[in-house]
Structures are given as structure tokens and as C-alpha cells.
Length: 496
Length: 86
Image (tube, rainbow over all chains, first blue to last red; front, side):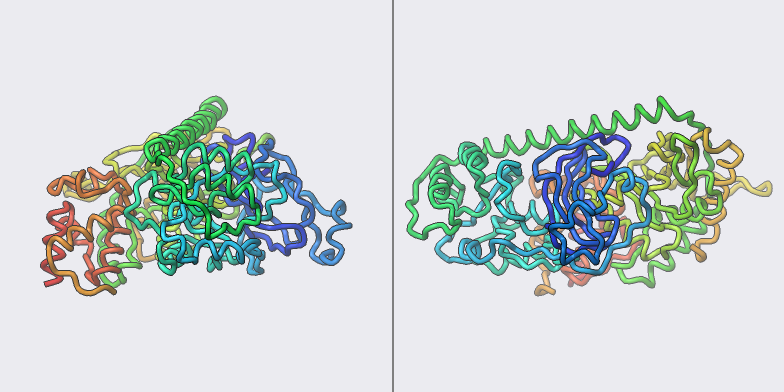
């Protein structure tokens, strides 16, 4: 179980995307792990062949627990008997690992039950949408077979639309099913898909009793046609399915009207949300308390003239297609990443044996979630990306963070974090460092202010940039050089 | 690309739909048509860019950065797009 942040001491293995015998390459997504903050896609850190899976879905284990055996690639043929020779996948290595690049080899994901389930979704008999809800993974049913690899967002989306993932071909990396695939399936399936008009409770169209029965019986609600109002799965649907576990529901199934309980369903969903947000609060509390307990912060700030950078940006954006447009946020991120390379004392990790500067600059970006809370995933190698690439990475990261769809390396690799509260009208940020990093850079809003230079007064667009840094790793002098370096880079936007 | 949308009511429905993708709580009943969209929906500059990109994708209309102030409220946005579409 990798440590997916300073605030994590245990995680729940939700799902395996690979099984024994599958070939994996460094960077492949192999499992989905639930932390207090989000469900995270865990990447593998070496090439090889998956041996034994040591932790079953549904099990919560402490950080550091081996999750699976990875065998050297050559051992593929002898995978099963050679399982004990495999290198374990210890988590601490995962946390210290940097610069994960996705591999190219498909981490095959056989759709295990497509044939029978296809009938469920495609059959015009089920005129109503086939609703589903999340049956919590049960360790007690390891025979249920692996579920198809899908992004968490796609899984949620499929649940909302009543689409069975087992019937889909994934178009994402390594055949992983994406939200687009689910959309495509929804369009192609008559009668399925509640559409975007579906309310927040749409994905829980099953009565609470039906959900509990299904969970106890180890039945996936996503495979059941709902006979209740609005296509809700009822207790009778579940009982019928339990009686014939062949998963192919009989088309002659008795339709039993059951009271729909949408309000109750919605309430349950919001309870989940409350629990998630309480857990996130605790996680943030733990990390920030540790930071304030252990890290002797010092703080510096600088007003930076942004006039030139913004004028350059506006001009270049005019020539860019709307999809390529770059925001000032990306500009300051790039300047910060370059400054981190210039002044390496602020980029890296402070561990028990002291400060370890990082060669690579993986810039963490604080991203607020709409439902509350905060995650600061990393943009890998931010110093070497050109502006359009950095902007694309930023947009992608914001989108995936808000969908709680992140990868393990993004949560563990950040060598420095930035936070931009300018959109909220904030002028100055006084940040708390995210351990074991040693610096946090804060950006305020860009404001027109009087600016005196060479005895003249002018109005300039300015940004207040702040630095919170770990005094164990650096001194104010180096911190000052770092802020000056950001300023210098912002005066030469064409070089960013 | 969809068929050209010209009526104001269609445009209004479209804008609200596109907004709901960046701010899920956005709906016709709750949006104050004359208040800043960014303020009332708590959307940041990246969300807003995603909205502008979605507008471009569905209508073909490119809102340049210098016109962002002209699409700041729902009413302004609909008026602006109607003028561009017509």
C-alpha cells in the first residue's frame, strides 16, 4: 500500500485492474485504492508480470503492506509457481519514486462477463434504464471475477446512466474504460441513459433494501434490470437474481411494483458525501498539524510587475485557437518551476536524515474541490513543459482532481507546491508547507496598483507572490533568490 | 457541430447546460441572470476557460479574452452570443 500523501496511514484496496499473469510496465495503472481523500489509481513501479495478488478488494491495510508480487518479465511462463521469487511492491519506495512515465504495453483487462451482460443492456425489453448503485466491494466474494478496468469517473458515470461496464470496450490507456466510452454506450443503447438532466440522486435508483440485499448476496446491482418505478432495482429484482446467479436475467421476469424511494436514495448519497468530506477534513488536519509541529516556517513576499507578462500573453492568446489558450496561472507556474531549478534548496523532500534536493521539478498545484476540501497533485516535470503543454496538463489535472480521478504518482511526487487564490480575490497567501516538501509558493490576484520606478509613478498590474519555506532546508537568503528568480522569469515571458 | 442556434431562449438553455458541466449546481432556477457567473457559481479561471471552450465547440463562436467582460453574466452572455450568431 503506497503512501499517497503525508496524511495517509492506511488505504482500502477497492479494485484490481490486473490479475496474475498480466504483463505490466512501469507507470501502468494496476489498482484502485481508496484514501480518505479520493479513490486513487495506483501505478506500478517496475516492469514485470503480476504474480499473486496479496490484498483482496475491500480490505483496508496499513501503508507499507505489500499489495501484490511482481515477477521479472522473463518469469512469465512460470508465473504461478514462481510467485514467491517475485519482488514485493513496498510502498515506501512508491512514495519516494519520482518521474513515473506511463508505459506503452497494454495491461490487458479482459471484460469478464460481457456476453451475458450485453443482453441486459442492449435488449429492448428493458425499456427503462437499468439503474445501478455501488455495491461496496466485498472481500467475501473473491470469485466474482475481476471487474473491467475503468476510470473512477467512468464508473460513476456508468452507474448514473445504468450502463454495465462489462459490456464496454475501453478506449483509454491500456483499454481502460473512460467517461466518453460510457457516453458512447449510452447514446447507442435505446432506453438507457438518464441523460445529463439526471438529478444528483440519479445513480442510486435502487431501494435501500434492495441495495442491502444485493450487498449481502454479493450481487452487482449494475447487472440487474430494474422493475420498479423509473427503472429502480427493487428487492424482488435482487431476490430473483439471487435465485439464478447465471447473471442473465429472465426476460419473463415478474414485474413487481415497489415503492420508489428516491428521496431516501438521495439522502444516502449525501451521507456518503458527508463522510467523504469529513474524512478529507481529517486528512488535511493531520498533514497540516504535522507541518506546523515539525517545520520551522519562514515567510517572504514580493510584489511582481505582471504588466509585460500579461500583455505578451494576451497577444499570443489572440493567435492561439481557443483550445490552446494559456491562462496567467500557467505562466506563473512555469516561472516558478524554472526558479525551482535555479535555486534547488527549495525543491525536494526533508526526510529523517535531512534535505534531499530533487533534480526534477514536479510542481504540486493546490486544487479546491467543489464539495469542499483540497488536493495538491503534481504536474510532472513542470520546468521542461512548454506553456501550451503546461496549460493542458493543468486543465487535465484540475478536471481529474475534481472528478477524484488521480494517479498515485501525482499524489506522491510533488517536490514543491503552489497555491493560487487569485480567482477568489485574495491578495496574499500565507501558506503551510505540505510535508515532506520544504516550500509552498502562494499567488494572489493580479491587481492594478501604483508602481514607483525611477522617480516616476505609474499604474501597473501586480501580483503578490509569497513563499513559505522550511528553515531546516534553506535560509531567507536562498528563499529571496528564489522569489527574485520567479520575478525575473516573469519579465521574460517569451522565454517561458 | 449542431445546427445553428439563433433564438435567445435556445441560447439561454444552451449556456445553462454548458455551465452545468463546469458548475454542476448551475440551473435556470438558481442563476441570477444579471449577476456575475464566476461569483455566483464559484467558478475559477480554468472553469471559465472550459466554459468558453465548450461554447466554441457547440456554437463555433470564439469569445476572445478581451470580450470576457461582455459574457460575465447570463444575460450578457446570451446577448453576446445572439449577436455573434446572427
